[in-house]
Amino acid sequence: MGTKNFRDLTTFRVGGKIKYYKEAKNSKEVMAAVGFAKKNNLPIFVLGGGSDILVSDKPFDGVVIKFVGSKYRVSNIGLRVLITVEAGMNWDDLVDWAVENNLQGMECLSGIPGTVGAAPIQNIGAYGQELKDVFVKLTAYDIDQGKFVKFDKEKCEFSYRESIFKKKENWQKYVIVDVTFNLIKNGKPEIKYDSLKEYLKLQNSKTPKLQEVRNAVLAIRASKFENPKDVGNAGSFFKNPIIKKSHVEKLLKEYPDISCRDNGDGTYKCSAGWLIENAGWKGKTYKSAGVSPNHALVLINPKGDARASDIIELS
Image: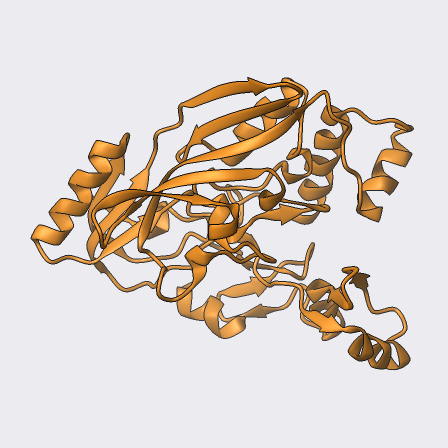
């Protein structure tokens, strides 16, 4: 094991020094790293791609485990394909592979940073698709029990940007080592969002293929989100609030242009970006942190010198 700094491992480019850092290539190395931590009574932090977390600037006197295995295996079942992917694979590399092989189900999730293993924790989603739509099961190492366990979709308790893994009692309790997805051979792409429909319309694409949808999503994301390689950020920092229809009706009377989407269950998802922008915070800075001038949902570390506390206070 070596030492590292969270600043070099997270897309926000903030975070303190790590006492012990281990990149685990397989399940045995995960168990060994956990065993070392337990033997020495050290705390454990499980890290994915570092693209969806904000870490304290204080030193971490424990063991950080990053699973980096990226192998996969494929099973064909009629018109469907089951693919089991090790948790260390880059998420967008998986989406790219699926689209190239004409497998439908995750094309709208193109361009989302991070690893396959981290995706179920957040139940990542974009442009009308969510991870849960193609999720089958995952394997994880239970740190407390010292054994590998399986989670199916029901057990994961997926909801809007939530899962069982984000609950307080389960946070940092598991090391996800592989995830299985269910994709459709030669399936037609799903196009639910107006912005995506409009972009494809401008490209004169009446019956777009999966690759065209992926390209469109990547282009839209590039116009909204700063590249973490250029400007420190973790993508969308805020969740869109879910509110009742009666609340939406009241808001529309005062703010007729408020952006809300009907969820079809009596609730509406309102745009947090619209709320922040109309509160006057888009493009503003606070200490060394800021709100992106391109997308109000994104908090940024514009000069690379922000502290975690700056970002927390701004949020």
